[in-house]
Figure 1: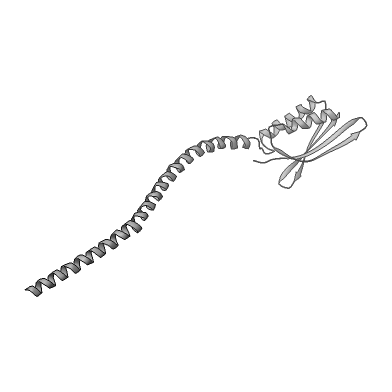
Figure 2: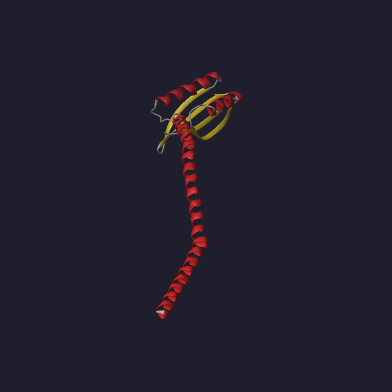
Length: 169
């Protein structure tokens, strides 16, 4: 029985030593591997949570700008018009009244030019009147592209020919 007892305590000691070594390995892995990974995981989760709140915050801020931008875009869009639109007629009325206010003789003609029509406006009068007319044309609410401006002298009267294309919507 003595031998059996001796083997039992050796086996029990060996198992205790194995448990102690495994416990040490587990403690080492826990302290140096698992806990740092847990901390990094928590940092990532916090960062994700913060990013989610920032995303919602950003969307709320940008949403207001988008809504304001839509109004601005519609406002800009209203300045573009086609030749067949009522706006084109209003623009022609503007040209006639601006020429009349500046004591200029006005001739308006339209030439087909590819997909967009090319409008030719000829005005005759004094230099300062033509320059005022051009400034008024520049500050008009409608958008158009000036293709050319040609000045010509006819005795004491100065003439200008302006070619421009109205922008399409």
